[in-house]
Image 1: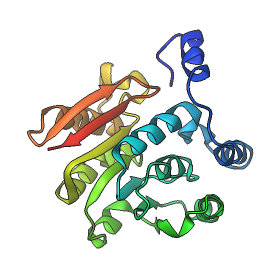
Image 2: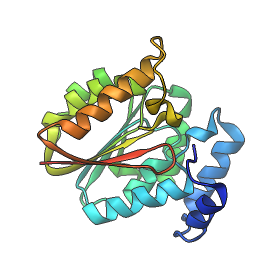
Image 3: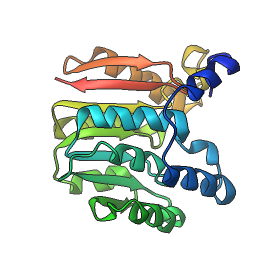
Length: 213
């Protein structure tokens, strides 16, 4: 979703760092072989994730929603040399594609794939997180936040994708639209929670940057 005029959006892309060759390959393969390729973070947002990760230098990254592994590889670029990534996804069909590119990165041993529901996997991960990227099923964002928050290190960062939800967050709410309802609750919680400092960035479909006090 692009909220800026197309020519301005393209100018921003053209004047941002290019994605590495490995990510270009994954981008192409995703569009050629995988359903719903628009779920890919893509070049522009991927460079944002990469730069934020490099600024933070996290030792432990948690990602909810692996898809084909593009965003995990972007976050990997800033991972501490002794760090690790834990990424969770339910789609068994994408597991081998993810692993292929994780291993091609040269840091595959530091990227741990978890297959299944996040709400069942998260309690088994007894880990403190420095950086979390939230990009899974939107209706469970509030639940995931509740589960993750106690595991965040002070000063840790939570990045939340799709928080503008194609503009639906400012439209009349359909009572049957559980995803938008959950995002409205989630966005309000991030903005008002006493433990959090939050800025919602109107980047693509909305990316929230949240710091845990």
